[in-house]
Amino acid sequence: MVQVTVLGHVQRGGAPSAFDRLLGCRMGAEAVLALMEMNEESEPCVISIDGNQMVRVPLMQCVERTQAVQKAMNEKDWELAVKLRGRSFQRNLETYKLLTKLRTVEKDNLSGGQSFNVAVMNVGAPAGGMNAAVRSFVRMALYHHCTVYGIEDSFEGLANGAFKVEPSVSFISASSCTKHYCSQKFQWGDVTNWVMHGGSFLGTQKQLPNEKNVPLIAEQLRKHNIQALLLVGGFEVGFSEGSTPALRCTMERCMKNRVLSVGVFAVAEGIC
Image (tube, rainbow, N blue to C red; front, side, top):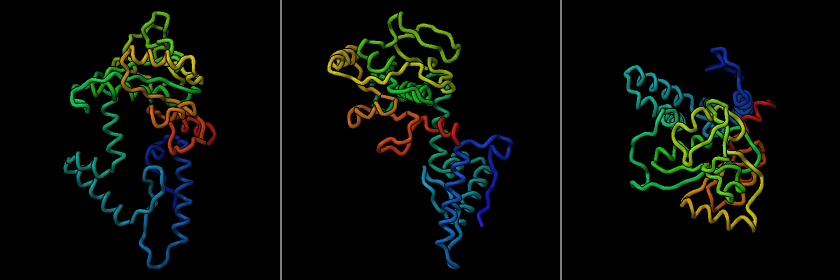
C-alpha cells in the first residue's frame, strides 16, 4: 500500500505548488516500481529525491538520520544539524544568508584578491526567474569583489554600448516601480526586490549577433574591459555553448542537453 502524507507548508494551511503535485506523482510511480521489485527479504525503504531523481533510501538509515538531526538541535549543535540535513539544504541556507544581506559582505574573494569586470544580460523571450537569476549573479559577483555591469536589450544593447551609463537609458525600479536612471555599475542595493518581479528589468530580445554587430560587440567588451559575460535566456544562448557561460531561463521544456531550466516552474504552476 502507498500512503500519501501531508506535511510541511501544506499541513500548516498552505496551498500545494506544482512541484508538490508533480513530486507526489513521481514518488508514487517509484513506490509502485519498488513494490513490484521487492520480495519477503527486501529491506524496507523510503522513496526520496536526490537532486531531481527519485531514489530509494533504507528505512532505518532515514530514521537514524532524523534522530541524529533532532539530537544535534537539542544540543544546539547547529552546524552539525545543518550538515545532517544534506547538501542541498546546506547550500540553499548559505545562499539565502548571502543574497539577503543588506550590503556587500567584506570577505576575501575566490580569485586571490584580484577584482574582475563581469557583465550580465538577458537573451530571448522574457521568462519567470530572469530577474531573480540576474540578482543572484550580481550579488554573488559583488560578494567576490567583482565589478558588475548590466547590459540592456541583449546583443543589440551590447553593440550600442548600453551599459547603463547614457541618460537615455532607463529601467523600471523593482522597489518603486517607477522609471529612473541607473548607475554605470551594479551596486548591492540596485537589485533589491528583483526576485519578486517577472519579466526582465534589463530588457531582452531574440536577435543574435550578426556579421555587422559582432565587431561592435567586441569593441564594447574591450572598451569596458569585460573579462566574463553571463547570458541568461532561452534557445538563443545556445550559440555560445563552449565559450560564454549561459544560464537557461525559458518557458520551453524541450531544451537540448539540459535537465534544469529557470522559468519552467512558472509554466508548471499555470498548467498543473
